[in-house]
Image (tube, rainbow, N blue to C red):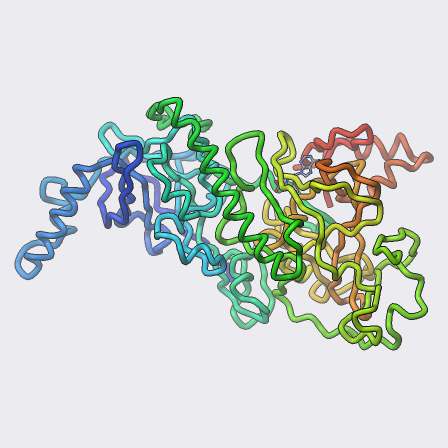
Length: 556
Ligand SMILES: C[S@@+](CC[C@H](N)C(=O)[O-])C[C@H]1O[C@@H](n2cnc3c(N)ncnc32)[C@H](O)[C@@H]1O
């Protein structure tokens, strides 16, 4: 059942008084005190609509506090704090100009709730834990920016892109001395309205919005909008990730406060600290699954001040090796013989993929292999050994590379995320579908979509989700099953190097290798080329920059 948030009807006049509901926190930045306040009656019926805003309104807050106090003292006889705030000398109320988008709709902004999934979340003060990505319901919706003729003023540093504050809210960062910027990130609370057979409901909660779930008893998560299945990633950058007030053409831009040159250094420090905290968290998860110290993950941004990819916030769960599942998957059929016996080995003794197998799915030995720990047929189950850098590119968002040289056939890592049914995956569109990988390698054409699977790395996954598309890639995906394979069983997706790769070269994958084959077929060359080169609806330009570039990201 979908639950859509109702909007407050547009105001009758441009200026409407707002009533202070609570002063949630305060913070001194650059010598100025900012208050995190909540407005009363912002939304019709939902707590989600209770707007919290960073304002600089000392007088108002002082008066509100005094009013609240006296209201509490005189509660038995006098008017309520709300009454007083509303009717007596305007205490607790602000005349704020409402900002609206083109259609005259109210621009809304909500803070996310604390996520229990991140160990960091619990350490955060309320305000910090609630920072995250704004994910407005549509492209036209942006977090509201207060415009007023009188204080409060939302003050944003021109030197510190607001985006840099939008990652996981980390105590150490916000706890730093005066930060010349106001965190304005907002993320609608995502919740799992329907709880079915999730192995990990918490993660499923994070992966799917409340409005996108089936009723509690259905066992299957359902998202409302229909979309075509995709064999690969879609355009992650289409997500309306955040509003950067530095670039947004809003009147508040004109109210930006100037900071000294020294302050310009602060963002870098904060970004570094922020990236370090996330990297530490991810590396700790990796370490627990056997990844050695040398194979650390680091975030590197030499482009701007964004410390980590914008969708890495407290709702994201790092999974080094194993997927989570929102579906109940049948047990694999028992293998008659151990896969490592009597088969053409897919890997050399050194653990390099041979590319010589014509099996669609590589079968590795599982737990029950009689060769036990000597079994060499478990290459993709070994812990990652390569240090990874997740770095920002100018045109392709964030990307991944190895800090050490790689050789052809080397297994680099596994694509992890939440295993969902194809029924669910096919209902995801746009940014929600950007990290979906279909497990359709061995799938019959007429497969029941509820019994075949996809991996969604939107809310959980690992560094491989940053492997961008290239029309001339240096990695490929090999599907690997453990013990035995069955067409309606999820399998593992392992990235292997298809060539020797020098350190720090971006790792890339062709999101649709079948398109590349068509493109290269001589017979149909011109026809197929022009078909592929012609832009389809909503297709994203490919920025792989290779000579073989087909012009657009593959679209399924
Ligand atoms: C799986 S994500 C890869 C990580 C992504 N760059 C990020 O920052 O999260 C796939 C998305 O990356 C972007 N992307 C990947 N390859 C690209 C390319 N060759 N050209 C342009 N954008 C690309 C697109 O937005 C695509 O939807």
